[in-house]
Image 1 (cartoon, helix red, strand yellow):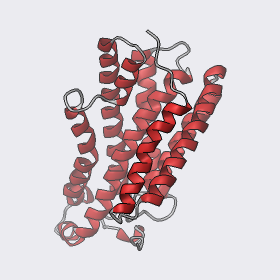
Image 2 (cartoon, rainbow, N blue to C red; image 1 turned 180 degrees about the vertical axis):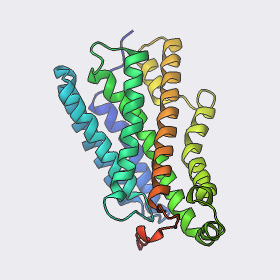
Image 3 (cartoon, one colour; image 1 turned 30 degrees about the horizontal axis):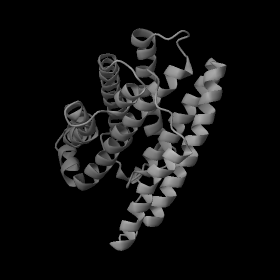
Image 4 (tube, helix red, strand yellow; image 1 turned 60 degrees about the horizontal axis):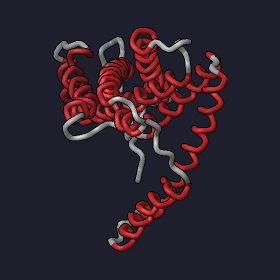
Length: 268
């Protein structure tokens, strides 16, 4: 069975829904129409560029260019994590902690999948490596972002309680454990909810795409289960690395809370 081919007319017809959304924003004075149209235009340009790049990468099948593309994805994801923080770490830590946590988690899980379950030939084939990395990285980015946000906000809010425990003899790990635990819960809740809803409430994009392309539904289900397992592993590993790294940075070897290493919240 061949996949249904889409042309410009099909896409233009679907894009009318965005114009309807913008009109509704105007009608209800939401003020979102400009942002909505700009986001749509940005998405179209980005996807067209990505399509062209992927076409070239798939033709080359080069470990060097696959690695460059993967690194670029991680670096852009690190910027998104930093931008979502209300209270950023100062210096290179603002960008470095989230980026390194995602690099560790997403690359390890992707290489694990490529070498054990998917097993393309060669193992770095960008047709498999980059889509897998993208799905794992996108969800890991959300977990890392939520974890760091909850950690910095929680330590700031509960500063008095944390410092009181330290004054009574608790180590930095003992004093910050409740905040770190809450941060990890915040980071992992989206993937837990997604796994619980998959199948009955939602049909994920990868599974839907395979079915629309003519794949056997049973095989598409297996691929989707694999992806969810990988995403759960990557998100947990990345969030854990980010939260523990954040605790290390926001305390010191003398078991003091170091909120001076956080920037003040951005105004507006």
